[in-house]
Length: 316
Image (cartoon, rainbow, N blue to C red):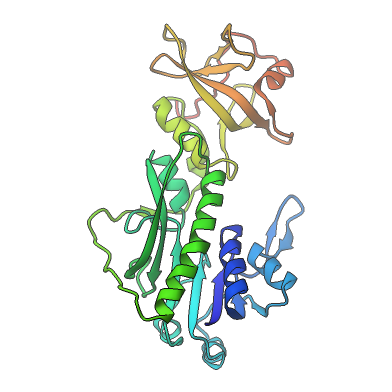
């Protein structure tokens, strides 16, 4: 197959790498470079880096709507456009260009978690299973016919990063099988049901601040869902913030003041009291402007003591 690949983040690299080994990649389309990091220097996408390292022609238009971009795609004479986490919506004019149309690798079992952040939202919701879907693209957001799906169990210790890495491999494998079926004309598209459809909205900055009044299970799910990026954080009574990177929920015998520092006899790391007679054990955290550290090291470098209220409830 002569393929145009469209993708941007690290999630898409495995798929591009796999397709590059088995097919002809005419060109790659990815998001333009954007400021990133403390110095806010322009950084190219992970897909652009792979394309450059493998001498693949790479384009980074801010839009595919201009006539010259449409003509460029038409002149490529592609059999197929493969999209994985690209970040731009494809118009019908683009979808109609390749002989076999456009297919998309999406990190959920559609129609559940259509949209921008399916891995985060599956973890946050406490889903026990997710997977990947290869679909024939249409103008709607992740609404096209399903070509193939692969499920995977969400493990109790999965974070966004571990699930992201596993699903990226599944997507690459599933794309190869799907393209083989398309080429051999033995694909059977399945129209997506609307029953069970829900949307994985983009992550907002306001969402990653922890509210200790919520249930311990939801707090745990959010920490897993947003680890390591963008990371959940707590506002402390000393005016500082800490990112919460790794935790454990501990059950205790009594109700303690919400947000108070708890030192458990059998634990080296400190905890913070939640509702429901539970404690959020701080195994790995990151204070503002510092490197990640254990909760034990954080406590030793602070003025907090057992029983102190350390959580600043901004809404209380």
